[in-house]
Image (cartoon, rainbow, N blue to C red; front, side, top):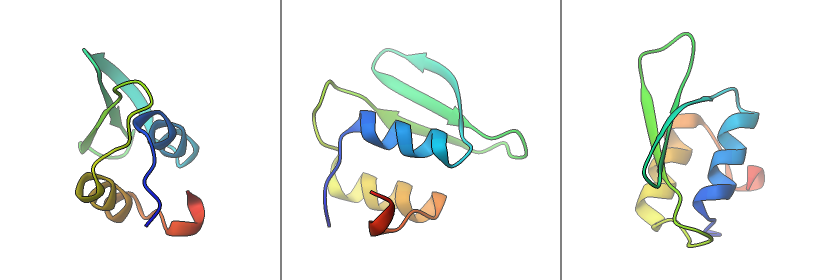
Length: 68
């Protein structure tokens, strides 16, 4: 799996309809209008996300490898 940065994941989430609710330090918190679910994405410069976190976010949002 290609590992991406937190900034790139934020851009993908916004394309998929997630809205940036707030920023707490270096963590961007996303929500959707039709849901109470919150997604937290750590944005530490251009550092890559950990594989497990990236996989979990991709699975929850419905992102495949080709969307990266």
